[in-house]
Length: 130
Image 1 (spheres, rainbow, N blue to C red):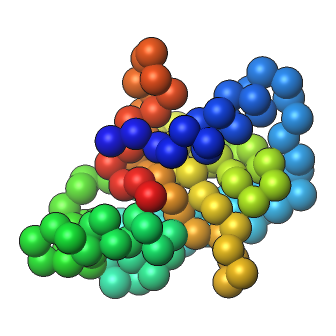
Image 2 (cartoon, helix red, strand yellow):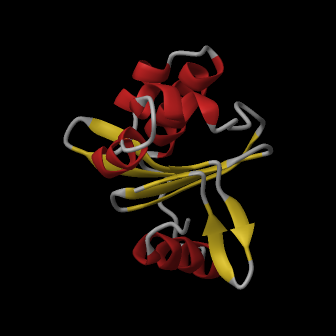
């Protein structure tokens, strides 16, 4: 699965031009941590509530629904934060174990992509994606 092209293009722009805004980095990082904590704690419904609607819907289509599917993915869980980049309503949280993509909605930051690994020549291959 591939993360939406616009998110990848924005991530590339951030890494090339260094134009990531520090504003919002803390809340985006906290949202990513809450998601990974829920997964690690076996709280599938809580993890799904922290997903962007499109990501939750894609997992809901799998057998057992979103709550079971998100736990079966074997996401790597918390790691050391390496970088948090925010550009507008999009964010990337890079950990030593995972990369997550988030979007800022009216109710806060929600995960659009998780379990993401670089996938040359494309930007990322994600286990969860919107």
